Amino acid sequence: MERVRKPAPSDVRLVICDLSASPYIDLAGSRMLHQLHGQLASRDIALRIVGARGRVRDLLRAEGIDEKVGGLDRLQTLNNLLDSART
Image (tube, rainbow, N blue to C red; front, side, top):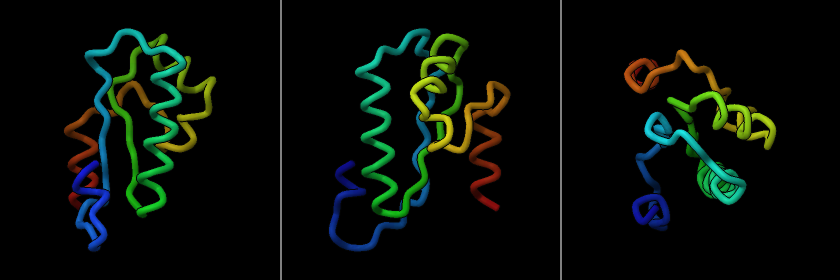
């Protein structure tokens, strides 16, 4: 966030949150992702989430985060997302 908060224009255009090692997320975590999305969006930076497992994905969808982060596709991998961002 330090790099993103600098007043000069940033070359950061995408932040990826890999949740593959997170089998559980609570409402506080969901709210934090909402806030992170808001902070990044205000600077024209996209937030994407990969690796969200069943319960995590269900909670994030119920909280409306999937719409903000371009969906929560269980088949989307970090490598696929990076490859598509490079082109």
